[in-house]
Amino acid sequence: MSGKKIYPWVICEDPRKGMFCTICQKWGNPSAGSRGAWTSRGVTDWSHATELLRAHGESRCHRDAAVTAGMSKQVECVKSVLELQCSAAAKEAACRAERNRSIVLKLMRSIYFLAKNKIPHTTVYPNLIALQVANGDALLEEHLTHGASNAQYTSKFSAVMLLDALDTWLERKQIQSLRSSPCFSILADECQDISTQEELSICCRWIVDGYREEHFVDILHVKDVDAASITQALTTFIEVNNLDYRRLVGQGYDGTATFSGCTNGVQRRIRTHSAHAVYIVHATDFSWHLFKLLSPSL
Image (cartoon, rainbow, N blue to C red; front, side, top):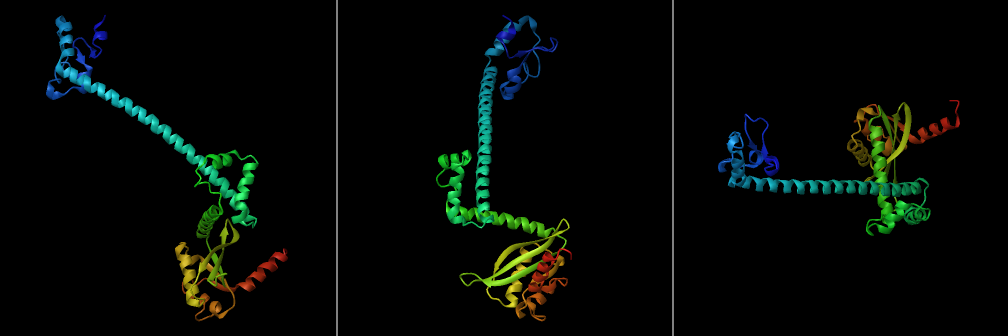
């Protein structure tokens, strides 16, 4: 049997440099005398090689280094197992997250369909989900069958929550488009809701790829319907959404003194922030817009 099989820790790359102990080189304790012979200085006494190998293998410093090496291998094994487990857990979490996203997307599409077609979402939404399952939607069926009972998002409260999330996403998308436009106009009108709360409806017109777009963007609650309160609501809307006053080129309201007043009306107060914001009575503006729609030759 060769010495390498008996002493697997020995290495000799050059007979002139002698034999070295790989265990003591890596794991030996210098204070215990492992640094020197067998580590940084090779053993070259070939006539007594067998005795020297046996003596070093039985030495205290070598045995301590071997124990340290064994513990290190165990640590590496445990580390490898943990890395595999973490990797598997990460993959499982990624798959679970992707599955949950797919489920939420299906639910969002359902609530969007109801809102787009003006169908009562709080009463129809649960039945619409049940219809999709009955028509063979395996993912939703698995979600409703095996998912947590407190996270199925099929109740009317979930419908309202999803609709709010959709509203936030659409509003953010519109504001980003509005913010990037070279110019924009504001159309506003106030009214009372069913609880007699004063509200200010905001629509905006802006340019997207050379074409005009017009969208409803927000409803603002105002304490009073005087010019100062309405102006404060409009300027807050502009500033909160980081819109540039210098790009505000038009404003349209009704013809009441609160809005149209040349001294203290809303249109005059807005022009102190943007001198280019031309005021147009939106009843006239809407009539002109309708006239253009009915007269394609213009």
